[in-house]
Length: 79
Image 1 (cartoon, rainbow, N blue to C red):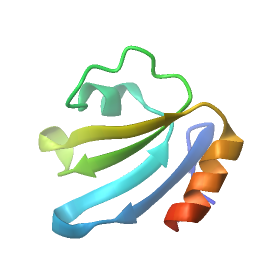
Image 2 (spheres, rainbow, N blue to C red):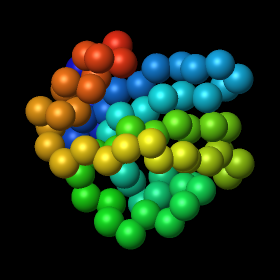
Image 3 (spheres, rainbow, N blue to C red):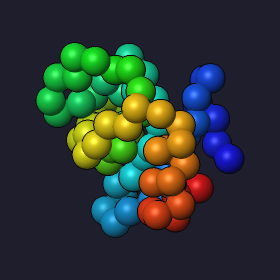
Image 4 (cartoon, rainbow, N blue to C red):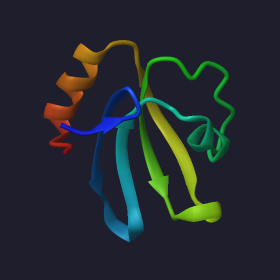
């Protein structure tokens, strides 16, 4: 089970260099988001495209507790 800082972190590679991620939103990732994230609490399902300064984050969903994170992780077969 992955950990990001004090939270859970799961991911899976997608086509074209994209990565599907399920984790808390760090300030760095929030700054990469294509839309402003006003509340970064909880966990987010997002698509990470690119690397470094050219990376972008597209938020798909926000989850409020670790139980939901673990259920979604299983459904999406994230590691």
